[in-house]
Image 1 (cartoon, one colour):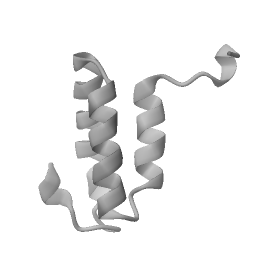
Image 2 (image 1 turned 135 degrees about the vertical axis):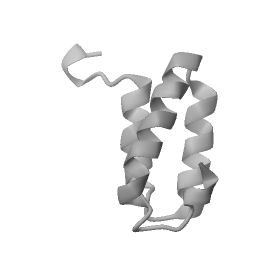
Image 3 (image 1 turned 180 degrees about the horizontal axis):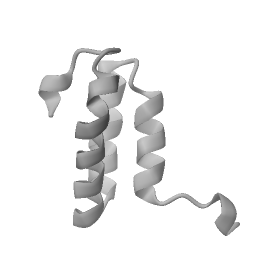
Image 4 (image 1 turned 30 degrees about the vertical axis):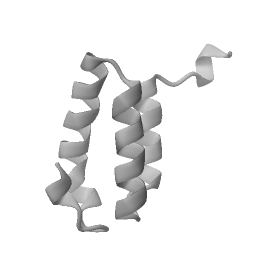
Length: 67
């Protein structure tokens, strides 16, 4: 794989979650899958990112109680 285009699993998860932010159901499904596939440190990173980004995403959906 070309390192120029390689994404970490956390970065890939962020990309997918950003694309799924329009749907509460899809976002939750992808978030759950991502958390299961990450190690502890990566999970913390992703959870923190979701909490920080949620201010923007929550204007599109109403599932902020999920976190």
